[in-house]
Length: 159
Image (cartoon, rainbow, N blue to C red; front, side, top):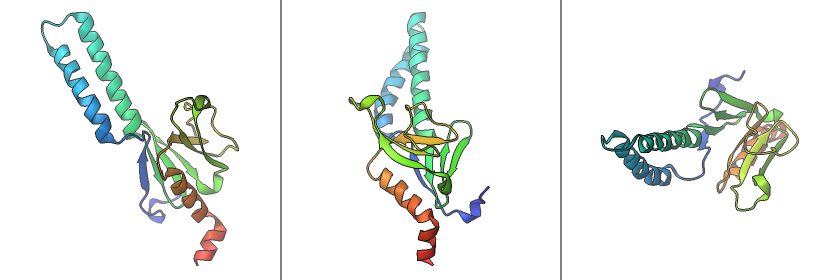
């Protein structure tokens, strides 16, 4: 295990590429209305249940998209999960790339870092061997640059 002292500050990115301000500008008004319906005494039970369901889905989306974060360090890449984290040392990385799940018909692009020599089968494939998140401008080049800097020949050249 690598000590935290040997790793400089990480560059962090959330799982979603949508800025948190845009997410909140949409979700806060919707959830405000849902909370009003949930707390209102004259709202039918079925409407209260559907309001609670919308709030739960929104909170789940927020946690999934913004709590889970990718940290790029000089010696490894770390993906914080809701419970726990995944780490892949740069020396173990066999594949880095971008793909669009489902063949690219209007879907979001994802960046992946893997110990496997292939792209993931889908967005659900986040495990001890594969980390992925929604692509955004400059993310792939940032990951590739960190991966290149970690190679022994790059360290020797810098010395």
